[in-house]
Amino acid sequence: MLVLGLESSCDDCSAAVVEETTAGPLLRSLVRESQDAIHGPFGGVVPELAAREHLLQVRAVMAGALAQAGIGLAELDRIAVTRGPGLVGSLLATFSASKAVAWHQDLPWVGVHHLLGHLNAARFASPDLPFPALVLLVSGGHTHLYLAKDWTSLQLLQKTRDDAAGEAFDKTARMLNLGYPGGPLVDACAQAAPRAADPFTPPKFRDGKASWSFSGLKTGVKLRVERNPHLAKAGAADPQVQALCRSLQEAISAWLLKPLPEWAEAHDARSLVISGGVACNSRLRAEAATLAARLGLALAIPEPRLCTDNGAMIAAAGALLERETDPWIQNADADLKLGA
Image (cartoon, rainbow, N blue to C red):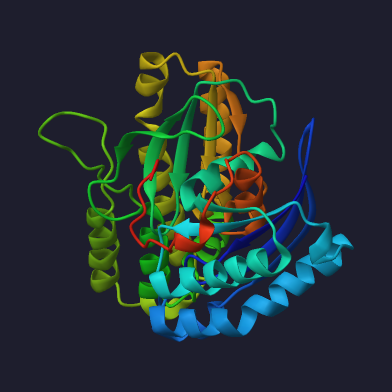
């Protein structure tokens, strides 16, 4: 089965062709157009600008994916597209284009939940992953832990009580004037630091649970920069900036992984999947490998280009889902719930 997958839920416009085989998904092509240069001056995604740029990019990324795969539209077996959640203006670009192509070519069409896509990004390298699996999906918009009993189901176990972990990376990079997006820049600074700055105090909750909160972490960075204004001007080569980034990165990684042993035991988990943009982080990847080995869990973390939003993960998920019997009445949903 050849599947064209389309993704434009936020600021990346992407298309990919995936061949579903008996051994798992095979990536035939992947095209991704970033909007970092557009949104960088604002320190975050501007929804209207993102939507307009997707309209300019969607035809080119589709054509590029098909050309890379060496096929035409007539050779496709189905089209899969992100239905939600996300920025509704951004979603509509590939959503509308996919339905138009499916109608014109008389192709089966399937709408995919964005988070199911991130789960299936792990299927390229680990198609035989044993279930049940703990699934940590962490990005600039999501910090959620799920239980998956197969590649098409996600049951929420816990989520951040306020901000997403990826937002802490972006806001820190902005306060330190490192650039945008913040995750890779903070990671690079942290790796260059011979030692970390003073550790950040982890959040504590009245119920005593190992929950997630990252709003206080951003405040902690802000207070340190206010006490030492030099940090906002020094740049990525400054040892104090590097030490602060390392401290931040160590905190985020440790906090994210802390609840997992208890959840793994409670649900007899056999695997751990980590996906989403923050799964590119070097510290998180290394500490997750150590934790998984200690708990006896199989670990699946997609390669970095498949962690960030991409059409390949949508195609991989779409290959497993039932086709829509009446796709023309479907619409994009900015707040799409799992199972909807």
